[in-house]
Amino acid sequence: MEPITVTADAEAFTCNAYLVPGEATTLVDAGTMPGVADVVAEHVDDLDRVVLTHQHHDHVGELDAVLDRFEPRLLAAADHPRRDVAIRDGDEVLVGSEPCTVVETPGHADDHVSLVGEERVYTGDVVVYNDGAFDDGSFGRTDMAGQSRERLIESLHDLLERLPDTVEAMYPGHGDVYRASEGDDTVREVIERATERAERREPKYPEE
Image 1: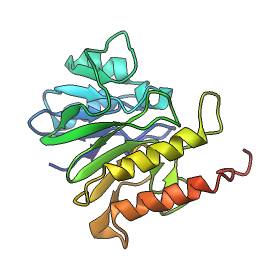
Image 2: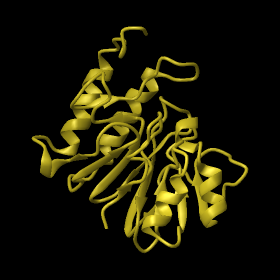
Image 3: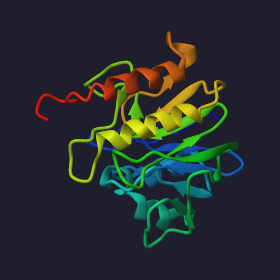
């Protein structure tokens, strides 16, 4: 089944949290939208796992509520009091019914990972399709404490090296989902454009 953006109706700032039904029903990130657990329950009775791309507040604000409601296993790269499985670069994680490879993609956050399948890639905040700065391929912000543009650029190159040409859809932490079938570019071309923009090393936002 196609991933469901369970934070789509959020009225305040949150990440995109994706519910992926299947052999291992998975929630990729939890968001900060109050009631996200209720939205998950509208679609599925059970949740097998939550996988975090990273632990910035907008991605984990409702995590405890989801864990309390469904008691899924928590998979995360960084330590967390409720983590069940530590994921590392190269690990394989079943997301719904699609095996995905964990690719460490720091720069926006030290613990950032992306999940790369044969058909879909979950990119968190390392690369998005549109975010107000760019409309057709943008990169995660790196102007806050603990962030690094150089590390993010390296991560984008790592992601491209390990991205199968069969990937048809990109599920980012913010902005719109990008599907190659609905646009003019492949997912690879979108990420390449974002990488080129990051490599200019110009401020992403005017206030930076």
